[in-house]
Image: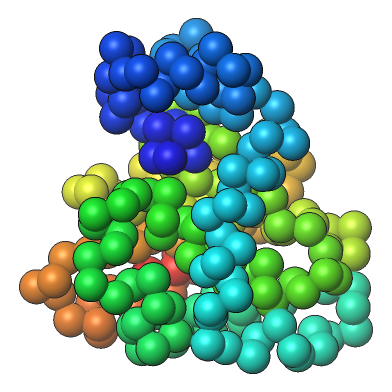
Length: 216
């Protein structure tokens, strides 16, 4: 899943029977840089939903029952600030964090799936939530379409890289899609850090793009 959803290279052996099986069935396709992705958007949505439906069902939150503003603007920053609070509460809000599910199953794909499930529950039929595929970038992009507006959220798992590098990449994505505002969510799994160090919010203006750095 990390190879497919996060565009990570080298996570699946080229000799893997499962990899070849998915390619032979036409479920996946291979890019020129040897990263894998769903063969088409329909397959991609089906794979994404397979990962998130159960998570969304068991999310112990009422965010999906709220009425958002005037139905024209989705308060993405407000939603993500609430997500930070729920994330800090731990398995009580996100049961899939029990034991070492994330570490033993998937990596980047699981973290992004939890955020994706949360946003799907928040939008609750009032819009569409898509997982975009960051080919070879080691990132997961989520696009929320609501009342004619697109909201781009990039998800990263902290691996030592500086957020500045990611923000520049996000600015490029915003420029390519014609957007002026984006959100970069960074999950930090360092157990030696306190929640005060992991949970933060920073706003940046880069190349005329407004970017919100969301620590989790």
